[in-house]
Image (cartoon, rainbow, N blue to C red):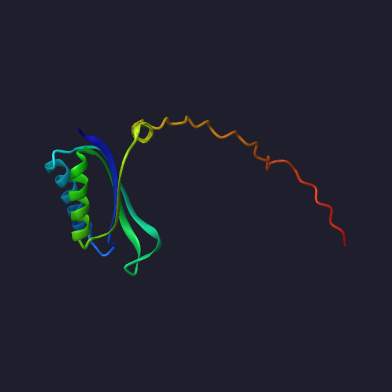
Amino acid sequence: MLRQYETVFILTPVLSDVQMKEAVAKYRDLILAGEGEIVYEEDWGLKKLAYPIQKKSTGFYHLIGFKATPDFVARLELQYRRDERVIRFLTFAMDKHAIAYAEKRNTKSKDPVPVKEEKPAPKVKKPDLDDDIDIDEED
């Protein structure tokens, strides 16, 4: 039986953009090869860590929501541990409330944001410079 999981992993910040995408593709392909199904995926980009890990203060965050068998998660986490590019990871099984929240969050982010119509700026009455100005000079 397939259960729904969510995994977040942090890649070391010394990777180039190509190496980072290659590492993400490796785990995406691993999930698909393990007869899993990717439900959603988010690239959170380079973020500051709450505390230093392996003397690094930032890391590339990536989240993948997927459906797989329970024994697959152990194989996925074993690959995380073996890969020196991954500095932290967390995988957890989602209950029905977490699944509903994730679906709501993902559909909300995919909806187009309504564009507000901008009202024209109110016209400001400019002072009329043609009027005679009386200046009293005191000597």
